[in-house]
Amino acid sequence: MTSYAIIKLGGKQYVVREGERLLVDRLDREEGKTFQPDILFLGGGEKGGQLTPKNAAVTAKVVGHELGDKVRIGKYRPKSGYKRHNGFRASLTRIEITGIGAGGRASTAAAPKAEPKAVPAAAATKETAPKGLPKGYADLTVAEIKDGASHWNRPMLEAALAYEQANANRKGAVAALESALAAKES
Image 1 (cartoon, rainbow, N blue to C red):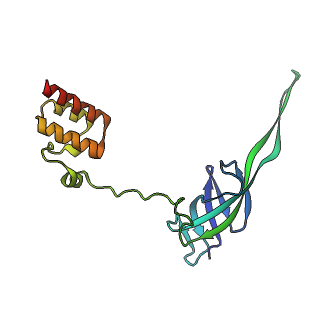
Image 2 (cartoon, rainbow, N blue to C red; image 1 turned 180 degrees about the vertical axis):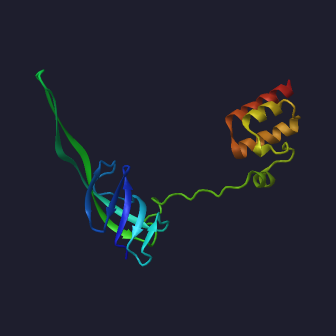
Image 3 (cartoon, rainbow, N blue to C red; image 1 turned 90 degrees about the vertical axis):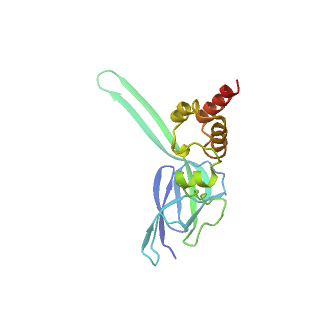
């Protein structure tokens, strides 16, 4: 069982324990809703502590929205009679930590999406490249594509356009290839 966690909410970090209630800056969630804040550190388990754990969840429930204590601000300039008083009450949200666990996220909807694995450009062109694609096309910049498109033949332009629309979909490259194809037709 984990004894504490460090979470991040609204750009601030909080040390929390299960069952604890705390005031945080106003959250845009309704009262009674649960959510899972970002976990920076999970501590107190059998491992001692884990920095940015992957398979852990801290579940918090919004108890209510309230205003903080009034902060009074006074301005004064000596010998001129200038006095101004102002007040401020911060908008806060009271949350309760309902669970800290190392077994994985409670709901799959709140889990972060796994990023697709990066495929090297050379491997991507070999697998998905249409026939007739100019050599080293995947490594070309949009400016290089614009310069080279005027010298390529029609099958190369069509293959490059098909590759752009399927993979990179860079607006400048697509526009350059389409204009080069239009120029070849006329």
